[in-house]
Length: 223
Image (tube, rainbow, N blue to C red; front, side, top):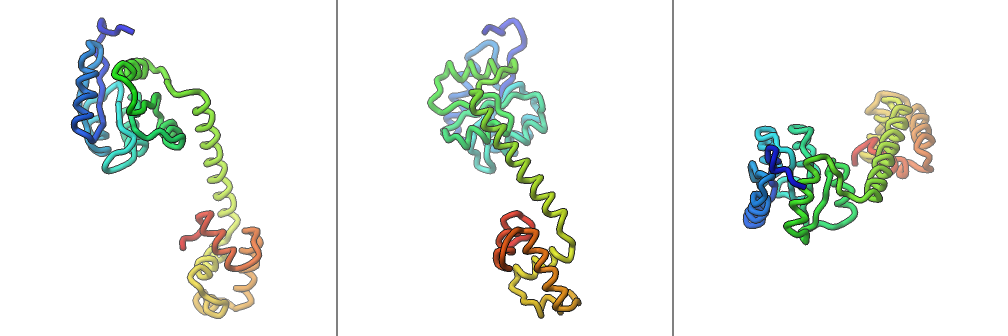
């Protein structure tokens, strides 16, 4: 692909290892159609430079000193929504790839990628091409759907609890017995037991301890 007749693609390199960052910049600058506008060492610096430079492509590491690549990528995309994100990392796990996809990456290169592969990935990303296998996209979409489903289920369950039932759950988590809860909430002990029975029923458990553990797992209370 030859883009030398148009303005060079502006690239922001985000890499905390100085020697590697310089090497990547030299590789990209050797191409007439690519221009490195800045090098950032940290995620917060990358977001600031992205907002200032408005690069077309951000070539970044997955692990940064102050944040993960996906977190930094989210900040960068907020500053420059149209920028293409290309991850370049030693992290090769499927989890990392899926996190990269969730962060909006259009390409994911390992550290074993050659100079030509890096150049090609940046070029193709700059024109909107996606270089991540379809199978991984399918997994990312499935995972996102599960996260949404889990969140929706939690919100629906939370909506069924009254403020008093949540108070009881929190007091149970703090180790209070029925008498203490009644005193602290200013209600009768039998009313406390009535709330406890409803809490246990709603969580689908069989004991107060299970109710506390289940509520904590769902994020209804903190332990």
